[in-house]
Image 1: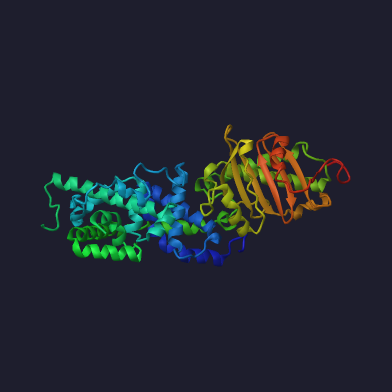
Image 2: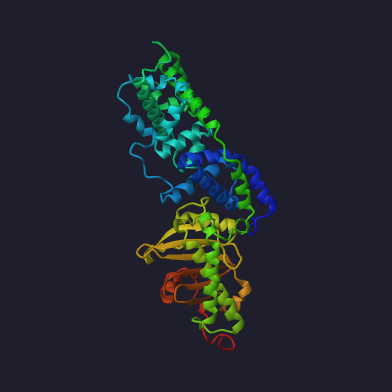
Length: 194
Length: 287
């Protein structure tokens, strides 16, 4: 691998590969910072660091997008003085074990899953903002960036089981929050009549 | 698979992430359980709603231009400077400070070994460069780390050695009271190299360990023993620099420590043989 001055062709290659993912990087920066100016700075810093590390990047199964997002994730948490691996959230356990925490019967109310999400765009947006940052990030990467669980794990530097449990809890928390909102306003909470 | 199991795996099923065997089990369950079918529908609906909300969020148009401008900056091209934007803003005052330090350094009596005048200048330049790079990087603290590298001390050696084609050292200095903070590819004297940064647990001060291609332009092997090793040490009132070569690479340490202490830290990493220290009997006279 060549070291030393970055060539024009290397710079061009980086631009061609990395810049198309700027929207995705910016979206994640927004989820992390909740502030447009900070998000721009964070995205810019992430690209700068990615360019400096470009020679160490290997185009693997995941492509450059998870790699960029991972750098962004690490830059953010490093700047915040946090460890790259966040302290385990109280309920952020390995997926294979968290089923033990589910209620002992199968008769869990299904209303969270029956919620008509189309009614609640703004409320959904606000509800996402109230989630812990780790859950917000995983939700974004899952829903908007459509990354696989493995890719999300790569970005967040955590096991796949943790990704699955965070997704599960994020969906539960969103559902519960919006159910409460819907009930307060006597809005429909069931898509299907029994 | 029962409903309790499906609650555990339903999300992964909806996302197509289950193994073939579990997927078949889930499909069998769904044939008999309309509630779980609705559960899957709900997950898909949530995903669509989130996608709809996020799809319109685009990066500002000017951000791409700023990023491209960053890539064209001299610092980005050489990769020798820390990457922090906040630090780049401070490069001018840092440059001025480095200039003052250089002026101070070349004007004071040489505190290291006495060697020939030409070599004195070159060794002084090495010391100044090492100290400058150390100062530039220590202000970043934990942020002085290439995110593409592992965070663990033992894990950075291999990728750095492969990338730089050098035998990078990553000494464990915990016994000396220093913890590893981060690693990046910063060089000195215009040569890309590995830079490991450590911080004193008790005092918060930083220590740098550089691995760079052998500093042949300083003609160091003129001062080496039969085994090709050499070292020199120099200190001013603030920072001490210790350097030695070993094969095709040179190692340069810099810290706010007394020369004897820094040499003691580095001693165990200075190679299998005992290198000779440059002393005032070297060469034709005093510098």
